[in-house]
Image 1 (cartoon, rainbow, N blue to C red):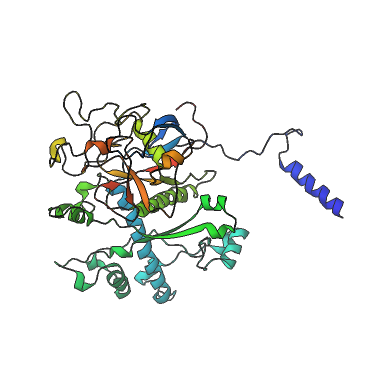
Image 2: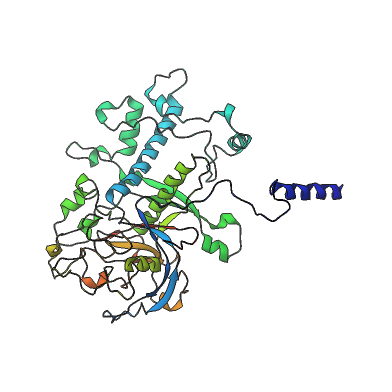
Length: 454
């Protein structure tokens, strides 16, 4: 009996590889062909080796960036810093998800099949059609759905995004809808002024999970021991415009920078490192949720923050031994025009044309097509700051990831910095839970395969 079972198993394996392989080794082929697709708003950084670190005199005396040759793999990078408009899409998605969930839960209590005319009925969970689902989906619904479990597919209860959310208080349909919006999503009456009911931004939390691959690869244990769960408040800290500067009137930026449409194309600020990471998770989810609705389309690699070496390599734009992304040693062109947004003179922030930030797509891009890799806002990277990392790190895709080290590398300098911090080799850091009026970010994504003809 054992011999018969073994024979059946071998037969299954042999003939499952293909009907017309004539017994030759042909490999397992995917049903669909993989074609790398450049993500919208990103550019391909071809990868390669470069001399990283200070090639000129280290005038700060930090001695934390000695020159060395390193190699990075190809990757995509945002052409610009993430803008207020782009980050606002993330905030609104979180906001709408929370509102729709609360409306759906309220609908379960008060919207019954006997009362389909109830305004809440439009926001009920969208149940799966159990008569037309696969055996796998049916099994998962019966055994796992309804559990507060990160791996639950959520097949039996899904949010219905087809119905618009009503935000105008004069058009709230009933008292249940009003209760959710007034008591849950808006600030209390005693915190309101001038007749305005503002959103309770601390309610806007994004929850996501990920596998700590580094820890899992280097330590023994069950996979569940290395799954990390994060809950992050996503609304940017607009008070940074006031808190970052003592005895300075910056209240208009506090009030309007993230809110007003005049600043939609300006880089988002007031976002800490954890919020930047949460944005990367959401952007990955947004893209893959769409691809999962299409047949024969593979999901994309995760969006993420660039590592410090990747950031410097991209900032150099393929130019070796350059001081700035544009290649020269000067911050002005031969016509005397400034090449970046920074503080050129003591106390004179506006001589370069802007007092604060400028639009994300300003000045000329570097040779990789990246805008504002020097100045405008400093940018979070995925690297923990260590003074000795250049001495200890690998020369192949070097990176220091240390969850216990809360100092994270920022690069590029900002609108409030002097020219030294705009140099492509200058290192700086900020604590991960700190939000500043001069720190933003841009995202990166791995390129799969080797691009021999960029």
